[in-house]
Image (cartoon, rainbow, N blue to C red):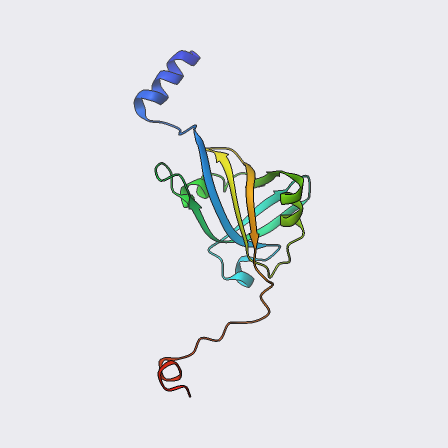
Length: 144
Protein backbone atom coordinates (compact mmCIF):
# COMPACT_ATOMS: atom_id res chain seq x y z
CA UNK A 1 0.00 0.00 0.00
CA UNK A 2 1.42 3.39 -0.96
CA UNK A 3 1.55 6.25 1.49
CA UNK A 4 -1.18 7.99 -0.55
CA UNK A 5 -3.53 5.08 0.04
CA UNK A 6 -2.67 4.93 3.74
CA UNK A 7 -3.27 8.66 4.17
CA UNK A 8 -6.56 8.44 2.31
CA UNK A 9 -7.69 5.49 4.45
CA UNK A 10 -6.83 7.38 7.66
CA UNK A 11 -8.79 10.42 6.50
CA UNK A 12 -11.81 8.48 5.19
CA UNK A 13 -12.04 5.97 8.02
CA UNK A 14 -11.33 8.54 10.73
CA UNK A 15 -8.20 6.81 11.95
CA UNK A 16 -5.43 8.15 14.11
CA UNK A 17 -5.76 11.69 15.41
CA UNK A 18 -2.47 13.37 14.50
CA UNK A 19 -3.12 16.88 15.72
CA UNK A 20 -1.54 18.46 18.76
CA UNK A 21 -3.18 17.56 22.07
CA UNK A 22 -2.96 19.66 25.22
CA UNK A 23 -3.03 17.43 28.30
CA UNK A 24 -2.79 17.95 32.05
CA UNK A 25 -1.28 15.22 34.23
CA UNK A 26 -1.88 15.32 38.01
CA UNK A 27 0.16 13.02 40.19
CA UNK A 28 3.17 12.28 42.34
CA UNK A 29 6.65 11.72 40.90
CA UNK A 30 8.54 8.95 42.68
CA UNK A 31 5.46 7.64 44.46
CA UNK A 32 3.77 4.31 43.87
CA UNK A 33 0.13 3.77 43.04
CA UNK A 34 -0.59 2.47 46.55
CA UNK A 35 1.21 5.33 48.32
CA UNK A 36 -0.70 8.04 46.46
CA UNK A 37 -4.04 6.31 46.02
CA UNK A 38 -3.67 6.80 42.27
CA UNK A 39 -5.63 5.05 39.55
CA UNK A 40 -2.55 4.37 37.40
CA UNK A 41 1.20 4.09 37.91
CA UNK A 42 3.22 5.22 34.92
CA UNK A 43 6.92 5.02 34.14
CA UNK A 44 8.13 8.47 33.06
CA UNK A 45 11.40 10.11 32.14
CA UNK A 46 11.93 13.73 33.13
CA UNK A 47 14.32 15.35 30.67
CA UNK A 48 17.39 13.14 30.31
CA UNK A 49 16.93 11.51 33.73
CA UNK A 50 16.31 7.90 34.68
CA UNK A 51 12.92 6.19 34.59
CA UNK A 52 10.77 7.01 37.60
CA UNK A 53 7.33 5.96 38.77
CA UNK A 54 4.58 8.57 38.44
CA UNK A 55 1.41 7.93 40.44
CA UNK A 56 -1.26 9.39 38.16
CA UNK A 57 -4.27 10.72 40.07
CA UNK A 58 -5.95 12.57 37.18
CA UNK A 59 -5.40 13.13 33.48
CA UNK A 60 -7.38 15.56 31.38
CA UNK A 61 -7.41 16.48 27.70
CA UNK A 62 -7.77 20.25 27.45
CA UNK A 63 -8.74 20.24 23.77
CA UNK A 64 -12.53 20.10 24.10
CA UNK A 65 -12.85 17.42 21.41
CA UNK A 66 -10.98 14.35 20.39
CA UNK A 67 -9.57 11.74 22.74
CA UNK A 68 -10.12 11.97 26.48
CA UNK A 69 -7.19 11.92 28.87
CA UNK A 70 -7.52 8.26 29.81
CA UNK A 71 -7.45 7.28 26.12
CA UNK A 72 -4.18 9.18 25.70
CA UNK A 73 -2.68 7.31 28.67
CA UNK A 74 -4.10 3.90 27.70
CA UNK A 75 -2.52 3.95 24.24
CA UNK A 76 0.92 4.57 25.82
CA UNK A 77 0.78 1.81 28.49
CA UNK A 78 2.59 -0.85 26.38
CA UNK A 79 5.55 1.51 25.78
CA UNK A 80 8.29 2.21 28.36
CA UNK A 81 8.73 4.95 29.37
CA UNK A 82 5.06 5.79 29.05
CA UNK A 83 5.82 9.50 28.80
CA UNK A 84 8.93 11.67 28.48
CA UNK A 85 8.57 15.19 29.86
CA UNK A 86 10.72 17.60 27.91
CA UNK A 87 10.94 21.33 27.27
CA UNK A 88 12.24 24.39 29.10
CA UNK A 89 15.06 23.46 31.49
CA UNK A 90 13.53 25.43 34.40
CA UNK A 91 10.22 23.57 34.12
CA UNK A 92 11.96 20.21 33.80
CA UNK A 93 14.03 20.99 36.90
CA UNK A 94 10.85 21.82 38.85
CA UNK A 95 9.42 18.41 37.96
CA UNK A 96 12.68 16.56 38.65
CA UNK A 97 13.12 18.17 42.07
CA UNK A 98 9.59 17.36 43.28
CA UNK A 99 9.25 15.20 46.38
CA UNK A 100 7.21 11.97 46.26
CA UNK A 101 4.61 13.55 48.57
CA UNK A 102 4.22 16.70 46.45
CA UNK A 103 1.30 16.87 44.01
CA UNK A 104 2.32 17.98 40.51
CA UNK A 105 0.04 19.42 37.84
CA UNK A 106 1.91 19.24 34.56
CA UNK A 107 0.32 20.79 31.48
CA UNK A 108 1.88 20.14 28.11
CA UNK A 109 1.47 19.30 24.45
CA UNK A 110 1.71 15.88 22.84
CA UNK A 111 0.45 14.03 19.80
CA UNK A 112 -1.57 10.85 19.57
CA UNK A 113 0.88 7.96 19.79
CA UNK A 114 3.84 10.02 21.03
CA UNK A 115 5.61 9.52 24.36
CA UNK A 116 6.93 13.07 24.35
CA UNK A 117 5.15 15.80 26.30
CA UNK A 118 6.39 19.35 25.71
CA UNK A 119 5.85 20.85 29.16
CA UNK A 120 4.10 24.22 29.19
CA UNK A 121 3.38 24.77 32.90
CA UNK A 122 4.17 23.03 36.19
CA UNK A 123 2.29 23.62 39.43
CA UNK A 124 3.37 21.91 42.62
CA UNK A 125 1.65 21.73 45.97
CA UNK A 126 3.25 21.92 49.35
CA UNK A 127 4.42 18.46 50.42
CA UNK A 128 1.60 16.43 51.97
CA UNK A 129 2.60 15.34 55.46
CA UNK A 130 -0.36 13.21 56.50
CA UNK A 131 -4.00 12.45 55.91
CA UNK A 132 -6.24 15.49 55.81
CA UNK A 133 -8.85 15.21 58.56
CA UNK A 134 -12.38 15.37 57.25
CA UNK A 135 -14.83 16.60 59.88
CA UNK A 136 -18.08 14.69 60.13
CA UNK A 137 -21.45 16.38 59.77
CA UNK A 138 -21.92 16.74 63.56
CA UNK A 139 -18.59 18.54 63.88
CA UNK A 140 -19.38 20.80 60.91
CA UNK A 141 -22.82 21.77 62.25
CA UNK A 142 -22.35 21.67 66.02
CA UNK A 143 -18.64 22.30 66.35
CA UNK A 144 -17.79 19.27 68.50
